[in-house]
Length: 386
Image (cartoon, rainbow, N blue to C red; front, side, top):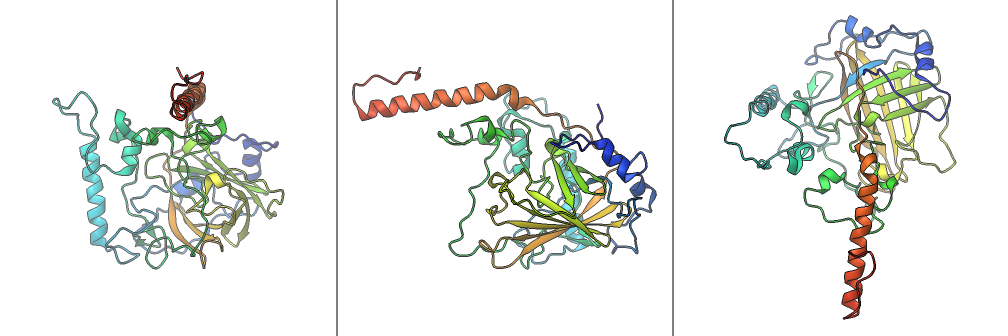
């Protein structure tokens, strides 16, 4: 079944209301498809975004940010901008990888799946010890990201293309919990109080939020798949619907940040239009969605501007005075999708939750029994340890 947008909100806001306010053509991507195609190897053309009937610049439509360019600059690369020779080499390597990955499995292949050597981390996450996805289903991108015609070696625009050093003694949030299909590749059982302690800590497996940073903020392609988005505008809100685990960011326009101490998923986002640019400021980000160790005092400022019929410029600035001396950030381009975004049907973790939590309790009982036995030689194991 096809879905242009699926939202569940705690208010009376609805998809129909957004569509009515925006008063755009039936197919939101039409404006992008009807305009002349932008040549990404050239600087931005002279372009003025069309206006909606509500007066806002039209940012609506279906977009994607898949790219070969990673967040940080690869070792040995000294410049933010690749040479065209470097671009050709990287993109040709991806062509060959796709051809190899889609080739028929050899007749003499082992019956048990064997993890290939030097496999990329994103493929390991999708395949694991069971084989997982064929190369056909994975979409890590096949082109280097360009901004204003420049092929970029990193999304970050810091001088060295890396995350700035943290202040001495800075206290960071713990690393985010890995989904279980990654942990199964060698991680040890999680102790009491960890991710198997209650259903709330299994948000990724339950498909409540994604395990990447697609929705942000800041927003990045996950290097695996499902890097599509839909933007919908109304007079008072902008919604960014993310394909990956159907995450939806709701941005209140011309509003103020909440002061009740609540930290909703994706933080508290407010926005305003500065000419043709949508500026989004997000605070109150929950610890579970920390970025580079920052969350409590983290502020992310994002900018969206349509620079061509089929291109949307995106930049972000990260600030946390307790961790870094100065703000820092990066930029890239969204490209218009040639089609719509479809439903991400994901529900399996909810069915398995009883078994997942029950198994963890059994492990804990066994560990408690062994500890009691070690402390008191000859004592009987604790109940529940069988």
